[in-house]
Image (cartoon, rainbow over the protein chains, first blue to last red):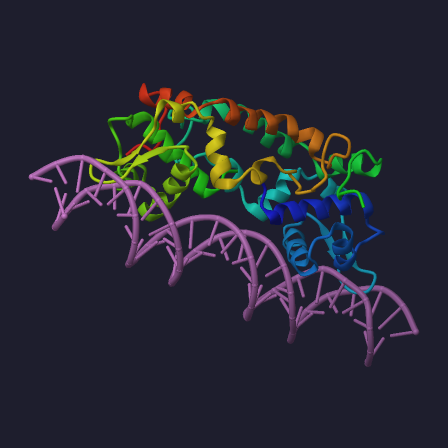
Length: 145
Length: 145
DNA sequence: GATAAAGTATGATAAATATCATATTTCGGA
DNA sequence: TCCGAAATATGATATTTATCATACTTTATC
């Protein structure tokens, strides 16, 4: 449903949410090792997110990526928007341009309630919200070792 | 959410459901024209579906693609399975292998109810079900001309 | 049975996505 | 103030997905 890029990006950002703040930062290298995401690819994704102010970064020694309080309050969907754009999740399931309640595609009335609930959740939940379970050990980012 | 291929395939099959039966068949060429799906690409998709008995075909003059009663009773999801496989829709939103209720990813509990409802609908509704609205003019496969 | 009209099989090309590599910029600390 | 550690920018390669093309097989009809 999400692109690989979004999956990687979201995983990395949730990791940052659980393990960084203004004083504790993480380098791409370490993030890559912890999340099993290819380093160079991850670097590119993080750069995109940083450019759009979804995450924070400082260069130089002792630098790295991290999340501010502001970053944490962004909805999960804002990250997906930056990486995948809005089209992928929001356009008609059949790809029909002019699909709406007045002129619905055959799937419209049947699947849209569920899909809208799915999207609604992504738009409502923030990065910080999701990281809470991670921090207290009731959710996980990697398979059991 | 669906691949382009699945979107095309589903659109074409719903068109077949509304316009064909054992006696009224449609050639790829006409299907392509009616649905605005590239002809050669559509041909390949229909071949896949035919090979997996999702749709029916007869060769030679007067031949073409069509849906039997049996074809109509297949759930929409069976078509998606053939084209996209099951992975795309059913695997963890974050792509984590071992993600389940006991060891959930951070999104699991929040988005899975909605996603399961979405998938459930695709598995419950049949091609025939969806074609009914099309036939009586209360749903549409193309944008207004 | 010859012919032409259809689907079938297979492979080639194009575009998008995922992945890798490398040079540049910024900045902390000796 | 200079060195190295980090992100940043840019571009190259590989893989997947979408698209096109073409030769082959089956079958209705004359």
